[in-house]
Length: 256
Image (cartoon, rainbow, N blue to C red; front, side, top):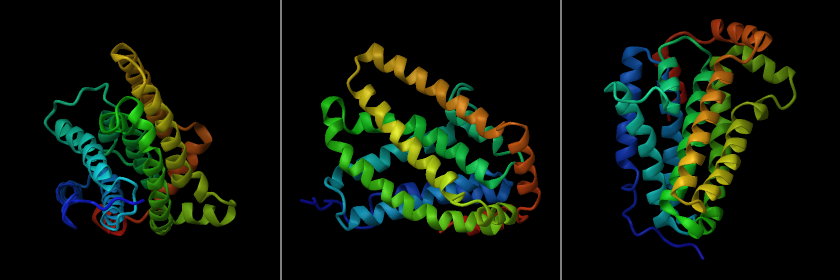
């Protein structure tokens, strides 16, 4: 039976959305490509808020807490980076550093997805549902997958509009879109769930070891996103030089 959220409608995620709007505005002003992920994250946050307000989760109160904790990992990392207090070993450090550089829109989005889903998400699960309680979180955790899939359908249409070469490739190569963001997010969330279960059942020493291993894996994926090999790099270069110019316009398209 679905549990109604006890919080007033429109309130649970408003603080997160306000902070995301500030990040988006700052990125537009400074022409920083980190605004792409912030715009995407805003879209997801609004969709999840709607699901909570409609009582679509088994435990809507817990999912409200889940969304807040999850968002704060990203928001705190962003603030720490701009205060020069974010460690260089943080999975977010590399993503934020590359926001200053010219790469494809899809690469910048994948950098954010990698850090947030592969590293932040397992920690969020354990914070909300420690120990054996994590099993009770599974249904709501995978319910978000459907919300993500629906959002990514529209996001990929936006990306193909902003990246004509990528859009052309999507028409030529069957199911290319499923091999990009949708596939990446789905695979990352499945692996993050496995990691969350291991974390939840480990002692403190085990948790530290899992987190260090996960951090190293996340950094390695960052490197692969930015350095995919000679042929993919050439393809990415042509995608990048044909993308719609204008950071503000690009972010506005990706924004809600």
